[in-house]
Length: 244
Image: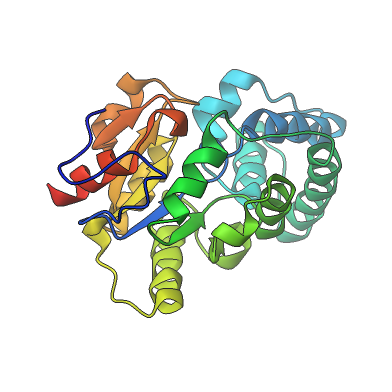
């Protein structure tokens, strides 16, 4: 991508002129953990006689938080999912996920480099359907936790994506943290799914999609810019988007 006038590549130390903030989705953008989530859902639901295929997960359930996934799967399979049952399954899923996540690196190639470069010039936040402590654990292991002053997980909002609540909450907290009246349309959300992009648009953020999970054709209608991943993104490109 060609840099906007007056800007250099990330890491140059020059401030962008239009871009004010970046709010990242987590799973599918920073962390390659969706397949791990699917594996854990499969393990937790197997004793219930439910099989969740990869196709079903990515086409029907990706984008929900844990509560939403279990409720949707229960509905689709005719399995009663009252609040108590869902709470139990979410707890089991969280414990199993943490045990598996602790065993290895989950970041997409180039993600850490882009995050470090971005954090040097604009404030960063995360708005995710994952639980806050799961996100923090992964970022701690990667040495990136301190770069995100605001992390909004599924446990912090009443409604999950595609509701705008996660992005609205994260952006408001980022404004409070910086003490600035940040402008939504001069701030960027980076997502990997249609549900996430709809959520970000509902919060009036500029929308960038990465094709880690879905194809460019599937994301193009809801994103202003589509790239293969964070490794292919530059601060200059985001600044040019916000200046448009």
